[in-house]
Image (tube, rainbow, N blue to C red; front, side):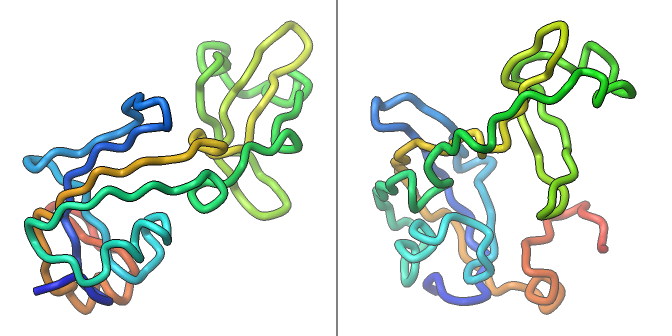
Length: 162
């Protein structure tokens, strides 16, 4: 069986930046799973996986613009501290993630800086601006269930239906 539309793919991988620093990884015992053809992973990586089989390995380098985009200074902005009146102070620390209502809907933002007057938030994806290098091994492929196809993502054991 090879990777095509509506296949559930399990893969191990190591993700590094251009300096070789490990950013993320999944091993064969706890592989990453996704539903192929449903925009669940970076499109360039998904395209590189087409027709691969269990045991195949590949290295894929993806420039920032084709991964999570370039870092945008417009998405970093100070917000008056009083806008966070209901949020406990222990949640308002650099590196914390919050949900913010934007014109495009709810967006996860990262707290980039904190001072007495403002909380500076960053709406960029944490990997924005990074060129990414994937070292992937395909560890499993199966047909997706009709429910997975209808929902557009993998259902793992113990996952509640929605």
